[in-house]
Length: 123
Image (cartoon, rainbow, N blue to C red; front, side):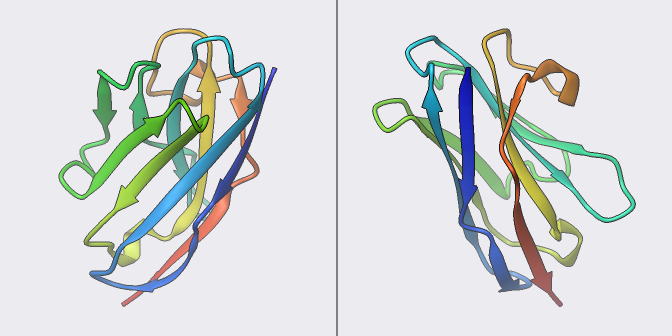
């Protein structure tokens, strides 16, 4: 199995940037796709971005397209999401997830989850 730990969250002003990291450990020798999701209070978990094992395929939610960039460094077993032009509506707990299957846009597409990191954007 794979263990995931997110970091990089915090408080930022609107228009600012943050980079979240997701470090994987465990059975990282197997190829796995990774995704980022977020969940605001009282809302369902929302897809943000996903990336294939090779990094050659990336997918984004319309709400973050052009502002967020997902990437990964397999040598470091780490995935990233660079978040620019942050808005107050980006405030949420951000989760990374991994799957040995195909890249997906839904929480049920992923089997392994991190504990989440809080991102708060002040207006």
